[in-house]
Length: 116
Length: 109
Image 1 (cartoon, each protein chain N blue to C red):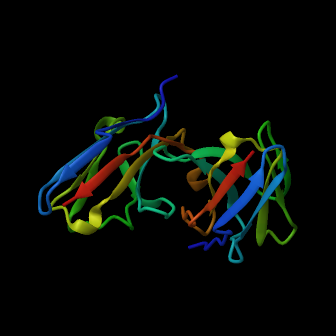
Image 2: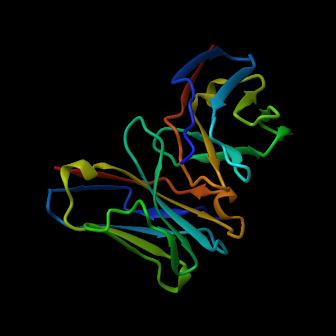
């Protein structure tokens, strides 16, 4: 069974440029998460989807970050414009759903963003 | 948010048992405790989850005392491939998803 797929794996951009990350969750998983992970730190939840609905986006910096999950499958996370402090690894995870925050999450390999 | 506290790092040798303790004093009634393992350049991977007492699976055991204010992940007979960062996560009830800084486990020959 294929795991969570993320692309690109690496991205280097200049500050003020836009950037987008794509995630394809495990087939059949209704819940999708986006995390940000800084070096030496644990993942920080940005947004959680239940199917197409963003049920928790309280940690998403909405002035520059946006996300969508059309048709309840793939998801895209966008930053516009990017700032130097956005350099981090962006992780996508999925879970079957139905158990809220206790669901077992399956993570993708992440996208390493470097903002110059 | 549930704040978890773990040792920053631990060292061990192959074949030894490793116990990593996580403190979570403000755990809520409906919160579960979950441990994840993360290798460099990979996303975290689920190890084990529990609510109280003891849970065991093919790779680890999780011990949770009656007051649930801490938990201990036990890895029996570690090998070099167990070198990774281990995260304790408390969530589900009154607390949302908050990973701590994790414990870097280093296993040597």
